[in-house]
Image (cartoon, rainbow, N blue to C red; front, side, top):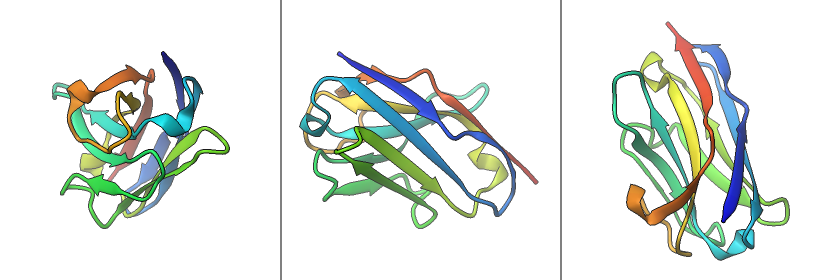
Length: 124
């Protein structure tokens, strides 16, 4: 099992940036892919970005491609989500998750451990 703690959320204006961090403990961090998901009020949790075990492969939802960047530091057991050019529709609780495999994936059912989430609010 992996314990995940997100940080870095907050309230920003449209066009500004935020960087989310997710610190992991438990299983060997470099053994699994990581992902970011988000959930807006009244909506289902949706995929945002994923990165494979080494950081060599990433994949993004179309809605964030070109604005968000996922990265990881295996020495620090941490995954990041750099969010630029934020829009009001990016407002949501953001969750990091640890996959049950090394390969990056956008499928929720391939993630076995989840953090508690961090709120991101973007005002217009």
